[in-house]
Length: 367
Image 1 (cartoon, rainbow, N blue to C red):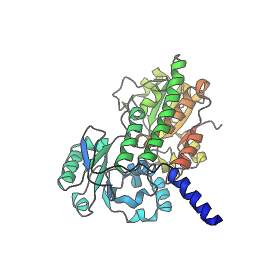
Image 2 (cartoon, helix red, strand yellow; image 1 turned 120 degrees about the vertical axis):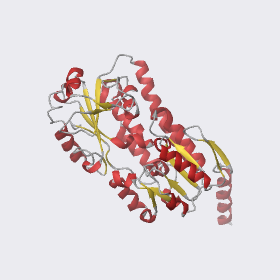
Image 3 (cartoon, rainbow, N blue to C red; image 1 turned 120 degrees about the horizontal axis):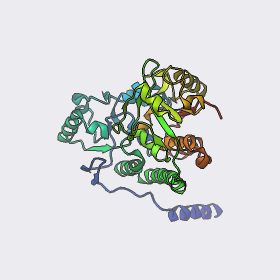
Image 4 (cartoon, rainbow, N blue to C red; image 1 turned 90 degrees about the vertical axis):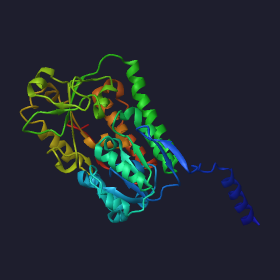
């Protein structure tokens, strides 16, 4: 009798809990570039035009590899360390067919995979090849949704996560991440609004090269993460995507803070940072990067205001971590309580199907 009562009580408790809201298909959504897309049924076989979008999927789906019909090799090629984390957690990722390299796509391969959805990145959809791919996929009955975690990321990331959650029937998890993201962005903006005095001047140097100076981020992409803190980008006069600056320009600008971006394992630059990188290795390679003749005499270097960041934050919704790192580095007097390490820990505990580890950001001076 007691067992029956306990079972009945458990049933009543479960019945009182809100059921997971289910998306109703067919579903029509507006994607990141304003296209209306109709999805007939919940996607079970997804093509990723960029492998980096597996990171976004892994924040809303407990087993993102299980729904892949095919994917591009760009994340695996550029960041093999993060791929290795996914392979450890989901070994079947090795069996997922490769459909392209993030720039080109094999139409023959996609035709054989019987996909029910393709997800492309905004920068792919902007190219002629990308437009051809969208046309081809739609002609073969595969709906295409474009997501954007790159352009105007601070304003667009949360909405794109909500879009992804709706499309994949994972709204509850996606909305929770979007709320989490928006609250942290708001915290930075509100703090800056209360402290309108200008922050320091900053150079953000993409993939530092000891033989020449320097590719500086402009106001777009990760460059926008300088402005949100109320700081000033010395390359703000360049096109939004940034460009080459001369050593003479750099000396004249004399930035207060230097930030380098790179990827793991010294790809594209001797500076190594990102998934799987040991913090000591990141710090040592950053120190060598700023010992070049173009950088060693900068005020920022002499003052020890030197930092490094994983370049591929500009492709994934983890970019809130970059925003918090910038806030902590650039204006510690008003952002001393912001801790990207704690935010990463919460993302890993609440959202990530594959925990993120490694040195995604680093300062030349240890804490």
